[in-house]
Length: 401
Ligand SMILES: Cc1cc2nc3c(=O)[nH]c(=O)nc-3n(C[C@H](O)[C@H](O)[C@H](O)COP(=O)(O)OP(=O)(O)OC[C@H]3O[C@@H](n4cnc5c(N)ncnc54)[C@H](O)[C@@H]3O)c2cc1C
Image (tube, rainbow, N blue to C red; front, side):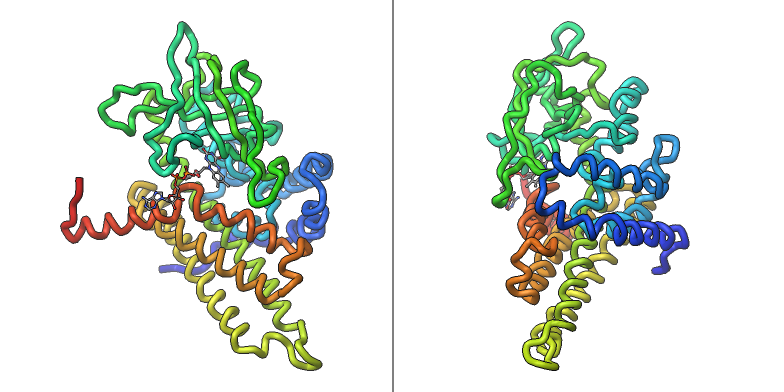
């Protein structure tokens, strides 16, 4: 195996690192103390500067306005951007837009691309993805209450969703709704339908308050109601009944993006930990880093981050060479492993910084609260662990109904 980074990846990392140091890290205190809406003009300026680096929407092919990076190349960029909570947004590669762009590119009609994809790529609008419902367990994705029924030339949607990230301010939602309730295969019952958020019957009920946050900041999670929301039949995204197949396609690369972002979080937390350990003196001439317990946090974190990165890059390589279905086990493995690694590294960094770690003077406290969700969204840890274990035991002849 070749573990070297290509010259292109080194260039991409270099451009992003320079941008982060100049434009992003100095801006973080403002971000922590002011709201997203107040900061929008400055964010707009910074996004313009990010666009000028040539790495805007870098995961998309150039013909769509991206930089044409491969999954592996973009994974490395995602790590660099993940070192700040705002990195992905500035380069227009933030969830859920990044996944919605990929789905629209792969499955959108020319009309859908013109109306929804291109403005999204240009950064003129934002979008959201509405699948999870408060009344149904999201871990069982085929079980949902939202329906879309054909009526004349329209789909009529009815249902209740929540945790639609960035629904607040989104121009359109991709809605997962049951369109074929009688399909024998439960995975063929739902479809994806594009719903502009100004459609009568679409209501953003509010933002969930998450981990003490008011919910209205730049990482919002919306509750959405569809009450006879009517959109043209032409808003069907992909084939009728193909909603889950498309969702799986979306989630494979999406998990690579997330995991590399989390490794970026780990690297920044690790850097803060090490800086503090080397310079904070417990007594004159006695830095914290002399303590074996702190040395253990440092060495274990280094080993865990390194292992996590290799696992993710391997999964990305497997998706690129053999396709996402072949890499299902690797994708599940990284999803729960990296989320847990991030949680442990953040915890050690906060512990090492003491009271400073609890303040909002570093991004650690923000991440500690907000990234707890990493073990829940895109499939809870237990769902992935079960999938991996069942697959392994299946190879040993264990079968269940
Ligand atoms: C920050 C955040 C952002 C999100 N963004 C979006 C979004 O943009 N769009 C969207 O549609 N959804 C989004 N979600 C929802 C997310 O996808 C769901 O929360 C997730 O699928 C789990 O579903 P649930 O919350 O209904 O939990 P449930 O399915 O009710 O599960 C509850 C718990 O049960 C346990 N469990 C589940 N299955 C098993 C099992 N097989 N074995 C053992 N234990 C199990 C797990 O510990 C799980 O956490 C987001 C969630 C969060 C937290």
